[in-house]
Length: 96
Image 1 (spheres, helix red, strand yellow):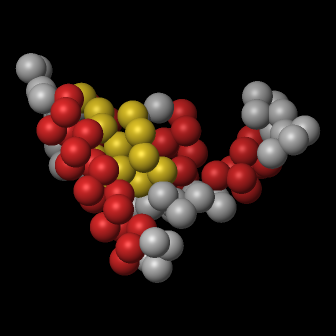
Image 2: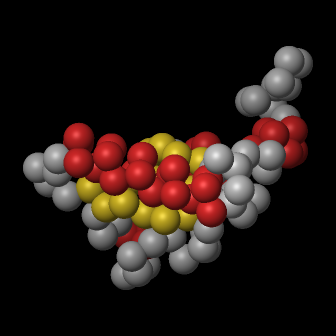
């Protein structure tokens, strides 16, 4: 979005993020913003992280599906799983 100050204009960033059909990626600030505005998301993050509060996901972001990363994980298998789930989610939402 031309002219959007992604550092100082969090309202603008939130509005832009809210337009996403699906957020896919690692657990970071972009994923947190997507979860905060209830955008569906598929994120990978360390397994059993303390922010999960003993749950399998992120309790305050129910629209986010978490893929846990365990020591020695298979990156190709994780990527294939997330890709297939992303396609399925977009099809179910009528976006594909």
